[in-house]
Image (tube, rainbow, N blue to C red; front, side):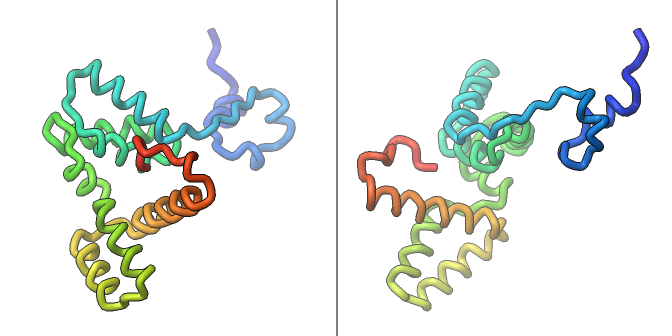
Length: 166
């Protein structure tokens, strides 16, 4: 069997179909993949960890699912790295250190100080977080996630699932 023509291979590997000429797009199949939810990714990671007999904390799995940002491929890559980092097991504290994220309680303390208008406590909490050299974009995403959940809880209290705090 002859190898696929060069234009076909290039089109398959290209992430942004809008940048390809229409003549090439007309000869290609296009698959628009949707992002997975944190729950879907967590479920699959839990299944994989069970099959591989790797002990894991639920919080560590949630952290990996959140960091994967909807991509199962990224989640699997992060899972592999986390297992290596944790010497064969998945601990939440080690996953947080690997990802550069801070504890959810620290996010709550930051938001509490902000809501109270307590600049001293806010700066103190930022200083504590800074000592871990966190991923600040992820920290802001965590804060936004908490604020979004608070807004939903205020308007639709029954819509919040207490069992899964993403």
